[in-house]
Length: 181
View 1 (cartoon, helix red, strand yellow):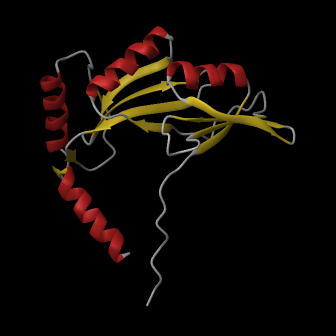
View 2 (view 1 turned 135 degrees about the vertical axis):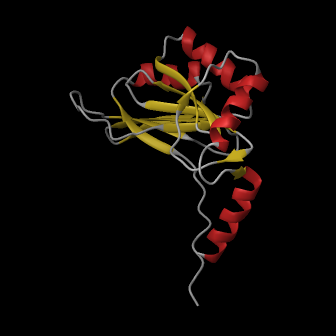
C-alpha cells in the first residue's frame, strides 16, 4: 500500500528585489497587501506581506537581487479575487499607478489581468469562471463591457475548446484523480 501524499496547499512566495522601498510601496499601496513583519536575516532585509489574516505572509520581499540580471526566473505571481467587480477595481488602480504591460484576458476557466511590478515581475490577478476548458487559452477581453457580455464572450471561448465542462464537474474529477494518486 502506498502512502498518501501530504496535504500540500500553497502558502507564500518569496523573491529577491533590488529596490525594497519601491517594491513594498507597490505591493502594499497598489495591491493592498499589509506588511506583517520585517527584519534582517544576516545581510538580507526581509519584508513579509499578506492579504489573508490566516496567512502570516503570502509574499516575502528579500533584498539582494543583483543588478544586471538579464533573465527573470519568475514567470508570474498570481492572486485570486472573488469577482469581475474586484478585477475591474484593481485594473483601475493599476492604470492610475501606471503599471506596465496591463492586459485583460480570458482563459475560459478564468478572467485575468496581467501586469508588471516596478522590477518587471509579471503578476496575474484573476477570478474563476464556472467553466473548465483545456489550457492554454489566452485571448484579450474588454473589462469595461457589461458583465453579461464579458461572461458570454468567455463562455463562448471556453465552449469552443476541447474538454469543456462545468467547473464543478472538473473539480470533482480532479478530486477523485488526486485521491487515487
